[in-house]
Amino acid sequence: MPHISHTALWTQDLERLREFYQRWFGAGSNQKYTNPKTGFQSYFLSFDKGPRLEIMLAPDVAERGSGQQVGYAHIALSVGSEENVRSQTTRMQAAGVPVFSSPRTTGDGYFESVVLDPDGNHVEITT
Image 1: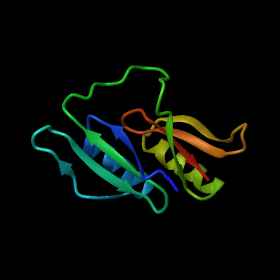
Image 2 (image 1 turned 30 degrees about the vertical axis):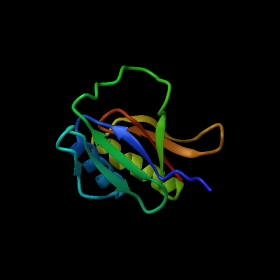
Image 3 (image 1 turned 60 degrees about the vertical axis):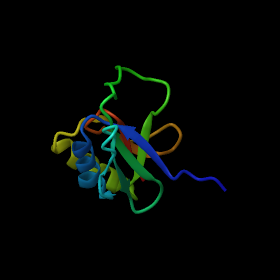
Image 4 (image 1 turned 120 degrees about the horizontal axis):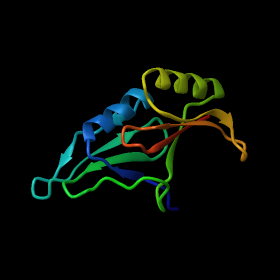
């Protein structure tokens, strides 16, 4: 039966993005993979449960445009409870992490907030 093994994000600052997910979500990391011929570099980040997140850097990756785009919308990370969503969001906001939407129950019944990682990707913090 197919399942999601990992999802991947391009970045222009691999170490900054890795540190964000390690600091705020306890991600574990493998050793950096580097292809000396192409300049491609990546880390696989692991969480307590679920698929891994691959963060990747390559010399020819450009900044993305502004606004909503077709494709990747957000990553959702579960922190276990509504109180954990609230406290995680509060700690991150106090540290200067941009909060896109404050903790709330959505129309489809999820309790979540959304913060932005250092590259502006939406990170949904949910129960």
